[in-house]
Length: 111
Image (cartoon, rainbow, N blue to C red):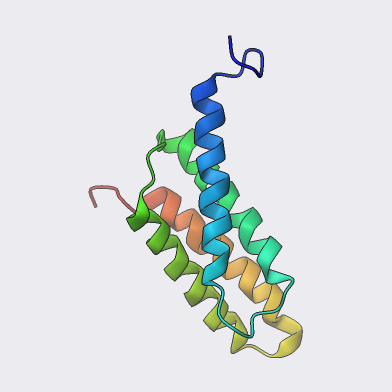
């Protein structure tokens, strides 16, 4: 039995790797990105990676996947930073969330 009761050790390891990946991807934010975007990025990336695991059974993300997500983060930030200041945070959150949803749904498929 796992240290966490009925929670399988394999699941704990998968979720731990997802959290680690999200923490690394946060570093892709460009210089000048507001400090508030760091926890937003972590939350949305971790949520997407876990959703990918639950929906698609993806538990073996590699450096290529991390690089794809880093590029999505950078592109989302670039788009948002070109909006007027009052709209930048919501722009960043919305674009990143949508792009990550597309990543979970379509990237790596046979399309």
